[in-house]
Length: 291
Image (cartoon, rainbow, N blue to C red; front, side, top):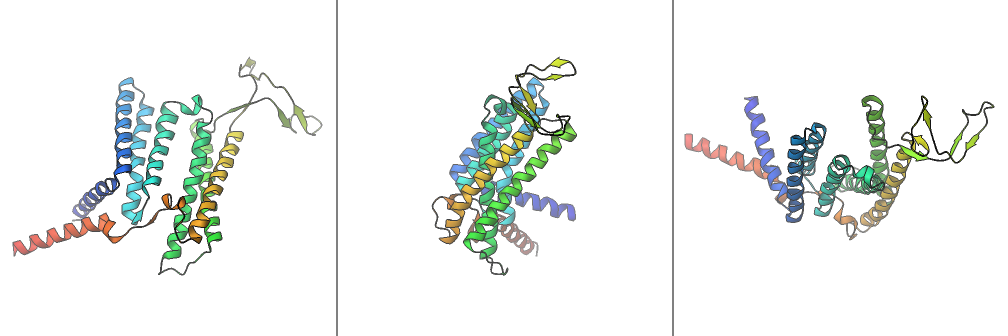
């Protein structure tokens, strides 16, 4: 009995997801084209024996479903603009960044994505506070300024947690998510026997275990990359928080922010409820026929 209910639930969820994906033609077109591209890339990578890249493709396909899954499950409407940007962000990070090595080919690629992440995370943070403000069952009301502050803090928290994740992957799995940076100036206290600040200028070579690495400078292992990521995340968070302030103050009429802030779904767009009612009507009709 329980297995039957679980199967029915996932069948209903799948139908609701299909309806959700096709609700907005523009976002569905982007989803379809990117999904088709990822499938083709996955087949090519499988043929070449690059199984790690195949994993990234599978991960990307799963991430593509997340926006629709959130909308269906939590009855939240994600604007088409935001949904399209999320799809492109996932594709840019996983397929272009990891598989096609855009992180190495274009040094600014990671910076762009982290800035965008700060902007989008602030939009999500603002929507959470805004939905609570509008919920009649919860005694929760923030001023526009505090709502914008919540959006900013939410975005920065997401950015910090992501840097924790990168650090953990590098430390425990031997990856290089915190990209190394070549620097030519170094200020350090431990390098000076007197325990005072030592400034080393014009560094052009590094020798490790007797071997010159031929990188043209000193290797900073992750610190500069992490701080740059947090700084651009900060810029993205502040930028949207300003828009979010006026969005909240003007009761959702800000032209920019309204394209990025998720809202509560209307009952006519609650596809999971619609599918459940459809199944319920079918079962009731079957019971009447059996009688």
